[in-house]
Amino acid sequence: MAEDSLPYKSFGDNNHRFAAIPRTQIQNIRAVGSYHSRHLSSSHTPKATDADAWKHRIPSGYSLKHWEPSEEPILLLGSVFDANNLGKWIYDWTTYCHGPSAPISDMAGDMWFLLIQLADKVKRAKETVGHIYSAADRDRVEKFIEAGCCLTEKLRSLLKICEVSMLKVAKRNQAGLGENAGVEFVETLFGRDRKLDMTEKFMHNVRHFNLHFDDGCEVILQKPVG
Image 1: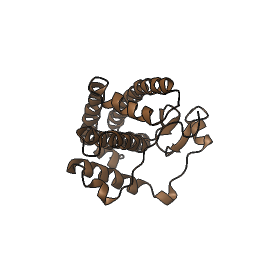
Image 2: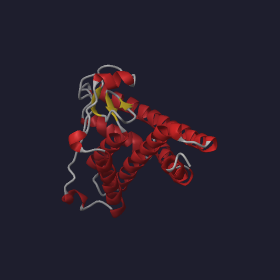
Image 3: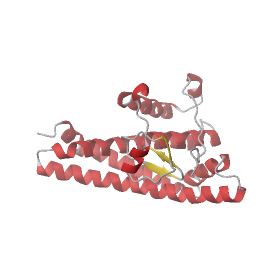
């Protein structure tokens, strides 16, 4: 696939952008930015390389520019994303299609935040589980890791369904993956007569996971040696 095989909408974070966005959505977007600034400095963000792709068994030819290589890769057609960049891609296309103040855009902002929370929790659990002294605590964290990975696979399955619709549009238009493919992705993911129920169920399950993780894992991860 070509380097820019997926259409990419990116909008700046200027203050005027937030004027028409619901307050709860603004809080989520700013929380995403706060999280990202704490974990990565833009001047020190490593770029993914072919070696990173090989390590994660990503087929050659995929665009890597939306993937931070220390994060779990998520493939969508010819591009590789991390959770943050995937959430941003979904949010930007949704606001492009429906406007920033639409309820569906609010939902996309929530999804962006949930994807980052899920990825962060699973990553920290994986990094810490080997240092946990208590066998019972270690087993508990391993179960949360398994549950989080299962949710990530559910996300990949949902994206695969969206891919099929995008490819059909691209084939019908005979113009490759352009703007219509991005619009089709949004309509498939959030359309009431499409996969909205599946998307809502996924988001509900991630919220449920996050709440139980906070209750059952955070203390263990903060003090793994007891």
